[in-house]
Length: 168
Image (cartoon, rainbow, N blue to C red; front, side):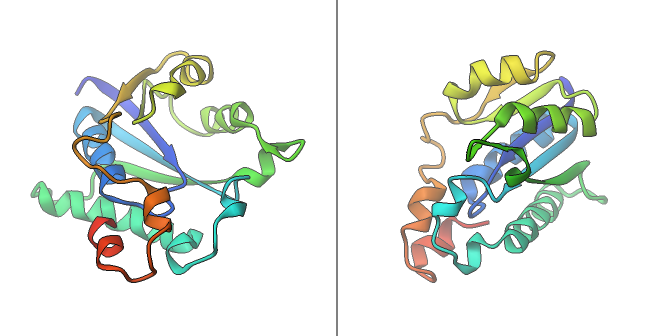
């Protein structure tokens, strides 16, 4: 494995096939993966509360993704994936999320992270500063392999076929 400990963070609101593809890539490249579920962030306050935006459901989806990976890869044991929940409201400054304080907390709680996964090129400078010993690994930044976003899913009807098709 090229990396010891990978980290992938997000709201996963809802967790979808694009997120799952990043998790799969990270699990295939890391001895262990820390998935950070951020809840109660400033932008989350703008979301309409629905069954798939509830933090407990999002956590459940991440657990389900780990089992799905195990089944798809014929593993006897669950992959080394820890799920850490971070309440972003505890790291607010002037009503805005403070990503650096969140990163400091994550670094203090977790093993030495040597890979940070995302699909967002614009996060590169933040990751270089917040996780200086980590490599930023981009997965499908153009959304060509999995052309979906959580924002698009939140705009769909609660039980639309399209919503259900993309969710993990």
